[in-house]
Amino acid sequence: MGSASAGFLHSLDWVTTYRQNHLWLIALLPIGGFLVGLLYHHYGKNIAAGNNVWLNALHQPSQTIPFKMAPFVYLGTIISHLLGASAGREGTALQMASAICSQLGRLLKISASEKKILLIAAIAAGFGSVFGTPLAGAIFALEVALIGSLKYDAVFPAFISAILADIVCKLWQVNHTQYPALTVPPISFLNLIYCLIAGIAFGICAAVFSKSMRWLSGVFKAKIAYAPLRPLLGGVLIASAVFAMGSTTYIGLGIPTILASFGQPLPAYTFALKMVFTIITLSAGFKGGEATPLFFIGAALGNALFYFIPLPLQLLAAMGFVAVFAGATNTPLACIVMAMELFGAGCGVFAAIACVVAYLSSGHTGIYTRQQIGEAKHSNFKNDEGKYLHDF
Image (tube, rainbow, N blue to C red; front, side, top):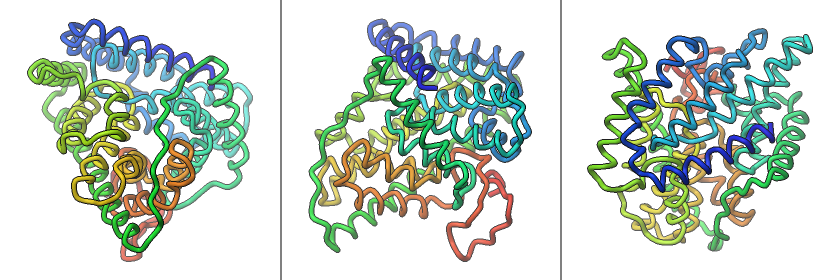
């Protein structure tokens, strides 16, 4: 999985650089979306659900994920980034990892319970290696399937696979994004209150993103019966907006803007525009992931909160970076650890409050609709075991 992530990341760097040097390619985004839509419509209907495919396999480990999901999502994501869609990379890494390791489990003829552990290890390896955060990757894999519950018999496989995948990925000379060292203020009651307020804002943002994406996806499916036309229309909307605005800030991964959010105040609407571009991209059916766009949205929202909350700009951006993702994926523990891996242990207390509050305030929603609720977030919520997020 480390080698698979390395190959994917090198490809992603190349197509991003090529697009930046040939901006006319953005005009081809509708055509690219249509072609990828055709591929999935004729040959990939059983894998079109993306991340929800491997979530289903975690809940029903007797299922085998088709191997074709790996090359299909790789090709679809590369086309998305080459032509200027606003998508991420974690979804691709997780789908590649789960498809490859599901086939391994089939060949080894292991039991259903062992397949589940193998799949968790694969998710940990994919997440940990694609972001260079092996500890967060392991916890994410343990935390993501069943909200409020961890599978402890998979702890060792998850951690060892994530750590080894990260080592292998770096041996392929992958350079992960380096973030600045944070200025962390003293821990005080007032600063903790500021964190609480920021966490609520991040949680609301996560809920708006998740619900808006689900709503717009439903609109696309209801209004456009022929699936390949959905990314074509989405591509028209995104390409038209880019050329009308004369800016590429809100397409692709957006790493330069994420880094800028740690160094200087950005326009307060930056996070909202990235949210709109990403929701259209993913709801229309383009391939990629939500994580890096959510990192962008969260960091930019934290940057915007600097106008109102007297905490250091870098700290607010870092808190938003992980907390919006925590609220959207319901994985607060993984995001707390990710903050410390990326920004240093000094931000741990502030990141923990922001992530937990965002997780709680985002409600029973999320970007992964096949997540099950194992332990409800609120005591007044009637928890029916086995319920999926799409039921709410």
